[in-house]
Length: 301
Image (cartoon, rainbow, N blue to C red):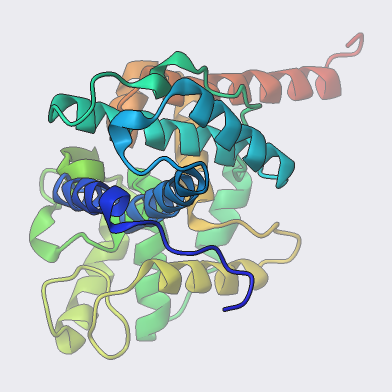
């Protein structure tokens, strides 16, 4: 293609290929592997233009020049942060393998970013969405069970679609979920979700062609994209309800738990967050909501 960057040399990309394969083996998501592949390809092409053809030759000024180029190209801070984080991890791996002598990417600070406020539904909005899914047809019964399940457990949609029937233990009201990097955890079910699943499972048994809990009309496992499409269809049927992606149900789950007085570390465990700081953003969200309620309700606010 005219004007396209040439592919990076086999010398640089051989190490990249090995690193990406290692990520897959550690359970990194396909999205993460794809993003890191793009980041390392871009940096490798940049190095070749500077006459650098081996990873031990990389110095901190090469990294600064690369990030400066990305800024000039209009890349967002989030992209710059991901690229530097990717390079840190990659060079750490090469250092552990004895293929470089140091990690210059560790000498640079990650760009500061403003954390976006997670979008979520208020409790009454969540109830309106769930209660709007009525009917005895397979799609209606499945969708009610699906979204009750997402709201009850707070799992990621990628985790939800991987759940099998055998992972669900309704007598104990719990589900085994496989999270990021093959980390297994237990999430809990409430009675509305259990009741919805009990209605759904007999219909599922008539169509299922495998172990998946949530299936399509042909009996195959639902995909992430299918769940997003189904949710948007259900939202459109509720007047005045803002569009929200499935991850917004996860945000709603966490926010409502904290609003109800749940312990932050318990919420961290249920969400499967590796870091408590990731969970803490929901405390800020709850405080903002309290401020809005106060300003709306107090006569001298």
